[in-house]
Length: 87
Image 1: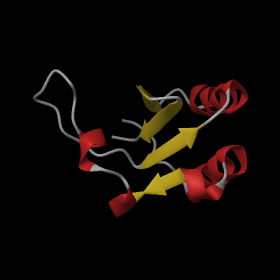
Image 2 (image 1 turned 30 degrees about the vertical axis):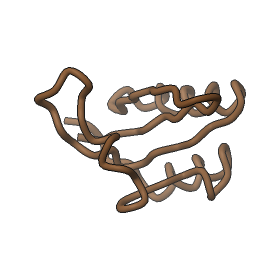
Image 3 (image 1 turned 180 degrees about the vertical axis):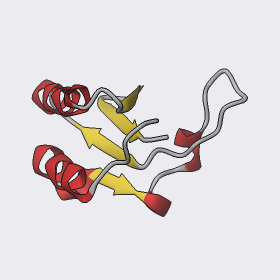
């Protein structure tokens, strides 16, 4: 079973990427809730819009520090968006 994303996780993500770049709940487009191959639908708990490789590196370290985190990455124009999902 995967761990839930906590309020502390959200605070860390906000410190890394800025509060305006950390989206939750209805602020996340439904487009992020499906697998591109189809058949799987689950909204991420958090969507983080990052702008630098340093932000990506810090978020990856956070995600890897708890092995039960899952990450999806997608690239949109020049902004990389990372969504953290707990199942």
